[in-house]
Image 1 (cartoon, rainbow, N blue to C red):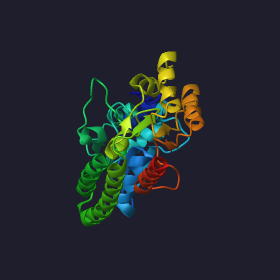
Image 2: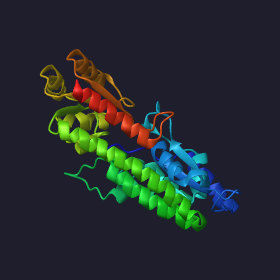
Image 3: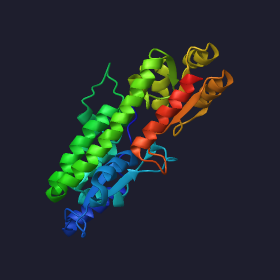
Image 4: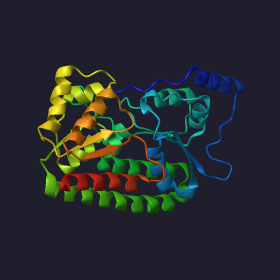
Length: 300
């Protein structure tokens, strides 16, 4: 599990200056829209979907080309959190900088939603897969909690938020149906990964992760993989022990490139995934696209 870098000294200095100046921070924009700050554009998009025109959303990480593991918050990010009505953090060690921002903001009115906490997921053998946005039931739970939080911040818009949430949850149900359809055809098939990013989705389909745990753990921690572990991983493809490779294209390196090359050389389909929402997509469409690509790969 990677830990994101803490907020910069510049941001902390800015917060101190604001506190000393006694800067006031009203709970909503001048036009009445609520302020939502999300650690990534995945959660930012969900907030926009549920909040509609009644929210102004700031997503701190949104560039698909950005290495999410080296993100460093700014003074502007800190100010956004200080003014927020609702804050959404992933939790589980994924975006620890958010806890620093929330603590520095010293807001008594903002509702902070920790998605890992909402998921109820616990570490297994001391390890927690924190990539919970690939788990549709968790997103459904977040949707319910976010709808309540927005309605609390602006009770006059409760019916609007609930209507938007109902429509979004219908899209989530469609995603779960797509998972179930794939599971009915391919449960038990082997799959390889470079990092645990998509594992919740793969588990929902019933696919078996054949990747040596030491390989994916080392890649996630940005450590070198031992020659023995790398050899065992490459053998998955030369031995055709897996039906596809799902890899995180945002954090590639020499060893993941070797795995990618081995899969292609063996004719094993490759499905890329990301940690942030790609440009031009919304959450449900993004997840459906990943499921579609997995389905095509399994059908080959």
